[in-house]
Length: 67
Image 1 (tube, helix red, strand yellow):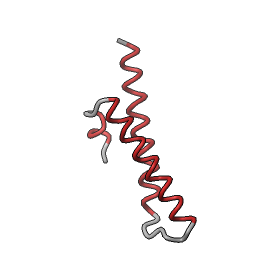
Image 2 (cartoon, rainbow, N blue to C red):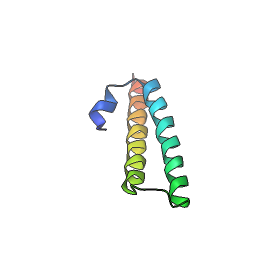
Image 3 (spheres, rainbow, N blue to C red):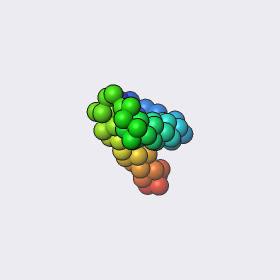
């Protein structure tokens, strides 16, 4: 997912997406611990997507505070 796609979403949608990414990250870590993880690159991708969502949320919060 790109940052442009995220900027078009509302803060509530971003928070929901962040919750989903955190759940997915937990499941991936669990799969890794039990040696069931097939795509190890997905962990990195999910972590970066979560960071991207957090960054956009912080930017939106800063914009709202400035106005």
